[in-house]
Length: 154
Image 1: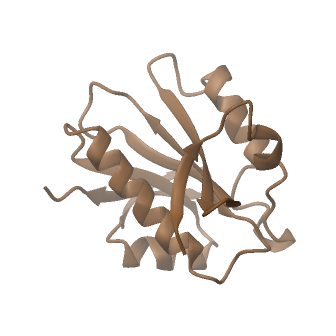
Image 2 (image 1 turned 90 degrees about the vertical axis):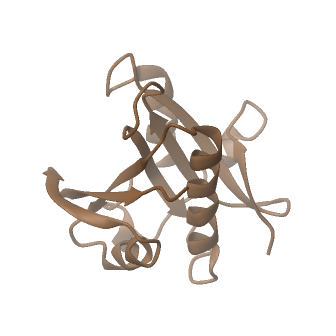
């Protein structure tokens, strides 16, 4: 397995928006199309930048993950829209892709000392992955999603 994060571009966006999760997971994560729309709509304000990534195993697109950030901060670095396509779930892609995203953020932004994400209160599989990756719940919620954080070790 060779996991790579590649920015979603005009060359791969159509493939990316076809990625899907199982029916039971639909309320846990936005569609890829909604995540990509955030890049242009900027629902979190003008200072937030978004970078959408397709997750590849060699040449096969297996998932999607997005990074949102405010560059001149130390703790406004977010992972969101993370999903592995239903055809590839349960094969270890989620854990590897999540670790790759953390590595990408910490390498790109030396000032980052905390990474955050939100997780739906019923998404126990995701919570397990995040705990294994040393994320912890803050106790704060956005609707039905709890904010979790990871302290960057340098």
